[in-house]
Length: 294
Image (cartoon, rainbow, N blue to C red):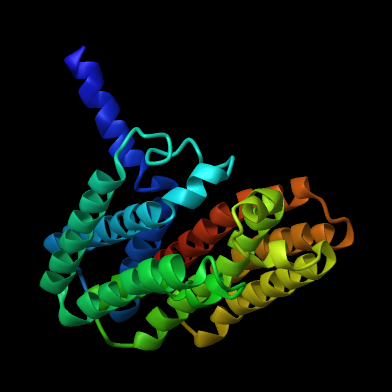
């Protein structure tokens, strides 16, 4: 009985960090560090790899947990989120806040051990997500995910500066790619759940705009992201393998967004959302493979 109780508590505290979100962010940090090491011919110390993964994991998980504390009233209203640990009373709001703050502290300490640049980027990312997005803008502005999206690009940039500052423009480009990916990812989900967001009075773009305008904006941001991803070849750091994979995956996600534009419905927006995370993962894998094979 005690074993089951402990297992349940661990599961709840794991769930409150929203692991499906930070899995991808940690991967972008890892991939960016790998890319930086290959481009600049630098072997990263195993300890730095451990610190990087630990820091981005703690930072992302901690920011998500504190955000869950802030959003506990909204989460209790929305059907998609009402079964999360805090609104379902599996974790008390106070304990979740303390847990999130401890994770944030761990992230700041470990990032400072890496270097000052990683620490500054980590602090900025957490501030942007928790304060700018969750506290200030999420309930007030349709631009919430734009200004709050900078935090999504920080893990990639942290991964790069963990290795080096040489050719830092590559790290900035990788962070920009994630930043451009975020609106399509979030807005396609919000379009699928627009009634849920409306019920909680969260002014996501598809909630405060018509379906036709929302799908046009989603299609435009998707196209911008795809064009940007393909144009990375012109930096000179990535070659044919990356171009081929980015072009194919970009064509698929563009086609999905165009279908949503021409025949708007919740199922198409849901499919676009579900493909968006594998799409970003594929791009970063393609970059790593390209650098290894070349």
